[in-house]
Picture 1: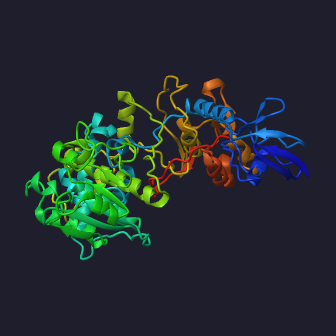
Picture 2: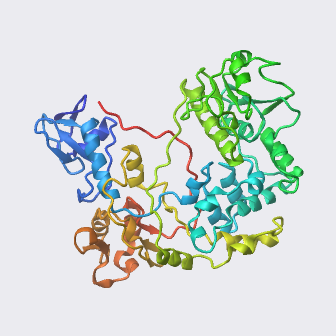
Picture 3: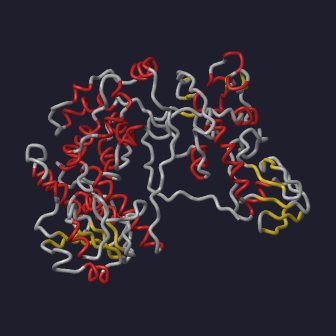
Amino acid sequence: MVRIQIDQHQMEVPPGITIREAAELVGIEIPTLCYAPGVSPPTSCLVCLVKLADTGRLVPSCASRVEDGMRIESETAEVHAARRTALELLLSQHWGDCLAPCFFGCPAHMDIPTMLRQIAQGQLREALITVKKDIPLAAILGRVCPAPCEKACRRAQADGAVAICQLKRFVADLDLAQPQPYLPDCAPDTGKRVAVVGGGPTGLAAAWFLRLVGHRVTLWEKTDRPGGRLWTETTPQELPREILQAEVDLVFRLGVQWRPGVSVGQDMSLQQMLGEFDAVLLAWGVQEAAWLESLGLKVSGRGLEVDRQTYQTAQRGLFAAGNAIRGNGMIIRSLADGKEAAWCIDQFLRTGQPTALPTHYSVRLGRLQPEELAWLVSQASPTARSDWQEVSLLGLDQLEKAQQQARRCLECDCPDVHTCKLRRWAAQYRANPNRFRTERPPLELPLRDGQLVYELAKCIRCGLCVEVAGAAGAPVGLAFYGRGYDVRMVPPFDRPLVEALGQAAEACVAACPTAALRWQNTSEHPHLPMQPQKEPTTS
């Protein structure tokens, strides 16, 4: 056995193993991109660097063998900075959107591309479930949302945005017309109790998401009906009242308790409520500053003063969101606030501290040149935006039109955003994708051979596919072609991709750290849950 030290861990390990393998034995996960079991690592990515304390050298842990007496530094600020730089160099030549522009345009960060793919495939219930993961009032928002997502849609610059809100409304209306509309399963009861004050879009959304994670939720409202400004700021023509009532009712079918006719601050004090519940969310809309101050609450320019990262007020366990903190805003923004506040409250109830909202890490392709946009549009459905306006949205007779409209999506997002190792480590190490950015090369047509796709723009030239193909006995394999920034992976002798890789194709796809080499993906994407970003620790 060999005695070594990794950070503060004194250990004995078998001779001949790598530093990466030794670190794994004590639960230290060192990032890797060009490593795969069973093949020689190309050591091209350098994100697995560690420092040898006795010499001060930084070495790749995936290829460096342990030696007796070795002292190794892994989880330190210096090593993390080196790994971050390595990631930023790789990102400088990695072109594409991790998350689509429409995702960021939607305040609720709905997974729009997945919904569109599902509708295009006729998977309407699956599409409705995708929507409801982020927007519980889908039929309502499909009518009254000003559609900031469509303003962000890349196709809007060409022949009109995809009719995202209309399609969302389409699947939601079909669901409401069913004898038993969709209701997600709630997590087991946590025993925690939350009071939500205000039954408008913020309060309804917060109640929905808090109930889903297992908390007992009571919704307090001074009027006799839930919905808040959805009733007063819309007309029956814009938002049919039967649709409004039906979708709001679903929130209470989840098990949310309803307490109408109670004015908090008058009929019941905030302190009484805080004594009775484990957390309280104020979602009561715009209120007079003087009245808020009389309750002992701090007021900012637009409303209640909160920590914008956690929605918590200066009082522990008391949260506020929506127009209560923003003044008059979009309904979709109010709903998004409810979703985010619910996430923060859930963290507070589980850990004792509200956690800052997670970030959605993404590399951005940026604005396309007219010829690039025209090429992307030519690859999608030629259906006009106007073909999906003012149509009857109920009935499967509209399915074909809905599918055609959904196929107008340019699929800007990465089809494997949930498995991309480069994105995972870049997010964890807070790598800046623009630090070493050069001028973006023109978009290139991905190489497609049957169901196998190679997208040069996303390839980081790690060389892992070359090693994997060789180890798996590929008929021809892949090789480096070109020099410097122009290098690329290609099958030698202009062989077709599938022929060159043969049965090794599956192993190469599995090993690719960025999904530059992948199978054509026609299935739905797993939903991106709200999760706190894991921080790399430093000793």
